[in-house]
Picture: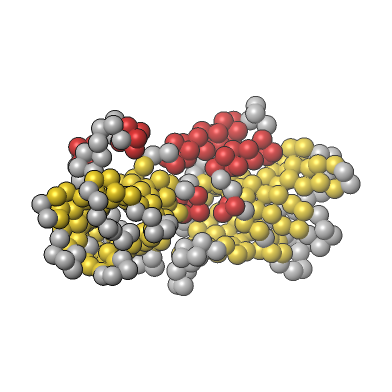
Length: 324
């Protein structure tokens, strides 16, 4: 699940220093200057090194003045810094003596921008500013990543890059891989003993969504009065990276609807919260519903396909889609 969180949070051609040569992550930012001109910005950032947490970045800025559209490019050093308050500070500092390249437009005069913003991992809130060598005040930015689906980002490529450019192909590949990841399910299995002394197992299938959230389908299997019961309900899952680098997973029902797959018992949908360490090892967790709560145990499954047959039939739609 830690790997999954890192995929939610993160997510290649010139000899010139500080130009991004690969795509490690992208940012989309808007800001408006004092004259009312609106600027759209796309950053392409390479992987940060382990020494000073610096990465090469390519910045493209798209804007319109007097009816003419302009597209410019410059290179930046991008620094990632973990702050004491748990936030991450991202700084895009133009390379010294960096020249602005005019990709589209004419009579363009542009000073390279500095962008600095903080990311709060608990709330996903991002706040920051833009400035340049001519700025007397910092200009607030709008960080658009949270409002963009992966397909939206793919559409944005055509605004900032021409199809003949090598970076265009790299960005396409980068986003297509993210789409593949988004379609891949993730599995968790937890168990607990209820206040009635019955042993319960929950098989959780999660699907990666934007904004750091997951949609999950939960099936709970238990034996009561000699009969096997299986119920299903839909949940929303949230994954949060804590200050100590542990990962907190919170799973809550979308509503009160519970479907009986096998048996005909009354069942309240469960909520789950648990924590994994930096190595994805289970630390602790809780199950709770409207009537009770219990300590969780984490069940490691080596064969998801085989284990799923305890909860799904081979003809089940979900089994056919993800386990066949």
